[in-house]
Image (cartoon, rainbow, N blue to C red; front, top):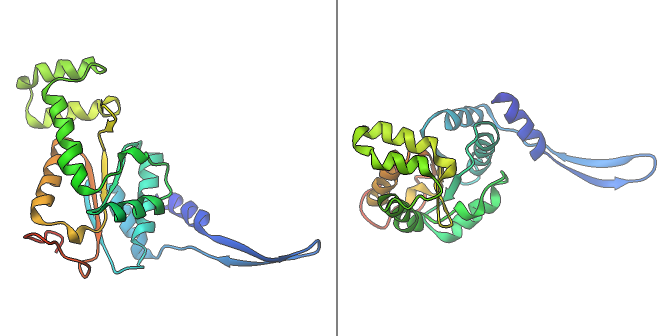
Length: 219
């Protein structure tokens, strides 16, 4: 992980040529460096299944998230990384600022993810609408022979093959602006993450906008 972080810092370093001729050039180098606290955060976010990063605006949270997602995508084979926030505008900003090789069609705002995407996946599973995946269809027919954890393990093995129309099943969810999420939304999110064995990364600032509805799980 440390070597990956060093390479990420090198790639983020900006070199601007101020003047150049045949004999010499004048360059301005703007180095990018994570401090030790940020590096520790990157390690924890990569290792833990459920993790939380908090900090004031400009503290480098988005760069940390981008580095973590890039590592997960390139080194741990997490190909279905969903970037989400409570609003469509903030989700678009997060997607544009993250540079890893992401699937654009898997990034939704939190409400669409919880009330549209996951229910469609659940409905497809209930109807056994899995023609492209005969193995999982056999699992679905014999679910009574497995406990809940075994069911999640079986689904996990088949994740890369699971497509529901134009919907991908995420294996990582990165939720930014988490302080805006109320208790009801957070409960639904956790339930889906447990059911589909999804790694969850929360990011936000407790001093930013609080939830409109009841409960503030971010605190």
